[in-house]
Amino acid sequence: MSRRSGADATRGTADADVIVVGAGPAGSATAFYLAQAGLDVLVLEKTRFPREKVCGDGLTPRAVKQLLNMGVDIDAPGWVRNKGLRVVGGGLRFELDWPQLERFPDFGLVRTRQDFDQIVAATAVKMGARLMEGVTVTGPVLDDRSGHIVGVTTKDGRKFRARVVVAADGNSTRLALGMGLHKREDRPMGVAVRTYFESPRHDDDYLETWLELWDGDTLLPGYGWVFGVGDGTANVGLGLLNTSAQFKNIDYRDLLRRWCRSMPADWGFTEENMTAPIRGAALPMAFNRQPHYTRGLMLVGDSGGSINPFNGEGIAYAMETGEIAAEIIAKALRGATPAQRERTLRTYPRVLKDAYGGYFTLGRWFVEAIGKPGVMRLGTRHGLPHPRLMRFALKLLGNLTDRRGDASDKIINALSKVAPPA
Image (cartoon, rainbow, N blue to C red; front, side, top):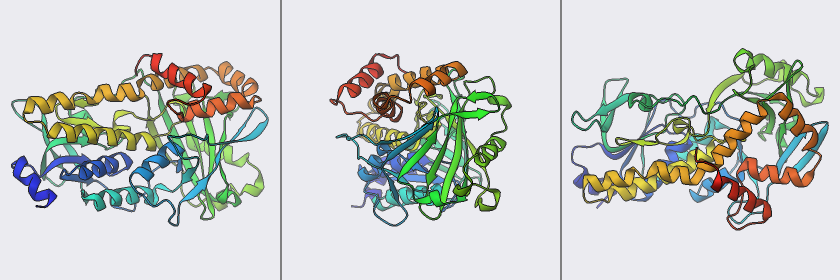
């Protein structure tokens, strides 16, 4: 019996066991693990692949682990490996290799989002998920009696029904809004702007980050980056946080242009060498939309604000939350009664808080602190000259520790455990 025919026998008139809205890393990872568990999963993606997505294109070892877990062939052409992070600030420039850990590989990757998402989505389809492109979901279909979501409506007037719906539709998620879930204003928000240049920096062995980002005489809470793509171009961008008074008054695109003009001429960051327009995107951080489960709807990735406030990384957490959601959904749908299924689904927010809540709270405190120019200046001038401290910072900011690792791992894990959950 096929997976779909077996599911048909149990789900009645539903179009799938689970509908996943969005085929980015979060949605595709969710679909992959749901299909692996034997469920019929339908993924609805509003665009068509390949498609562009605003991103730095850099993947830390945490994200690489998720790709390896899904069996993505990272040795195929187009994947560029890197050894670690080059840090520039306080008049210093030094390289930090990714830590040697049991839980994570010791290398990162770069791959443009132009085809990264398509590769991950294709992996989910290969596992058995069904993908429909060019389908824009406009809102939830609710059960009149319970108020539970039982499906979704689309821009072209269709309805698709499922036993559980997963919102993986990013920061401006229509599904979450349709279910009454609004952003929390007490969570940090970031903005990223980036472009591409033809540059000799395209095959760098390190991701490069600049910790001092100036707007005139004002030191901003954020960083600049140069990530070599390996195809003759480099992804160059800025990430800024809303924890400074200047946040709402900054012209981010103009700031990026001015920052690029200040770079060495031989890097090629000129208007003539720019191969793509400057684009920007919001970065929802530290679980800024909660609860992550309500009345049949689960939030994964950016839709639930699962971006690391320390470094703006989102892909790793998108894929991890997708895997967690899939595991809980699969367990829930094995329940004999609706009450049993609902009890299992309701564990999802607590599982996420246990996994990331304390760490994200540390991140919130961090971004609030660096929003004060004096703190940012103190950190770059007095923290950067100490290699041991910077290796600790790399583990902390990248959330790269072993459960039973060295002293720095134990400190970071202990701090994350005792901090209040986000």
